[in-house]
Image (cartoon, one colour):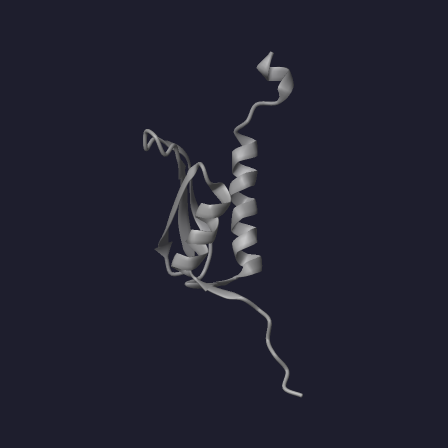
Length: 90
């Protein structure tokens, strides 16, 4: 029986599309700023205003599902770090 590899690989544009779907309705875009890193930007779709930009996120031109999930988690962690604790909101 032939062994089948089940590791998914996504090109950078396809990985970005997965991230756009994940963050919808917030706008998401990403560009590679170096051979092994990217800049991600979350923005308000109505106004185009940048809500969050993160530079230097490690990535490659071809990414596995786990790498895409790691990038999504890094962006979500950054979002949480900008939300004030409940005690400060009062």
